[in-house]
Length: 73
Image 1 (cartoon, rainbow, N blue to C red):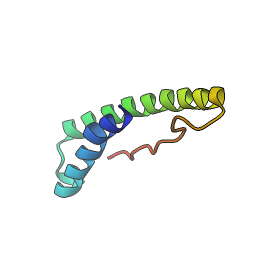
Image 2 (cartoon, helix red, strand yellow):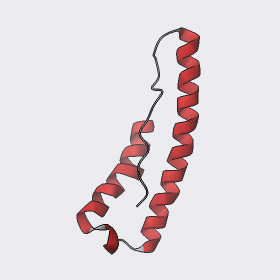
Image 3 (cartoon, rainbow, N blue to C red):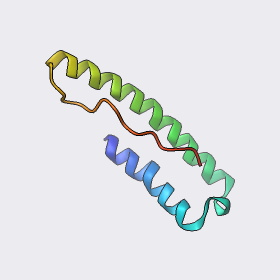
């Protein structure tokens, strides 16, 4: 789930923006990206906390405990 959200709501928009240039991106699209980015950051925070608990409980690394956060546009 983490990879799907990242791919379609974070990585794909960034790729398109790089293709056309950040200055050419309409303001509403930048705002939408930043809205999804904030949701993603909250989700990643919850997921990494969960992963740390699971890993501790099972005494092995089952879940990722760190995920890169994308930059603002």
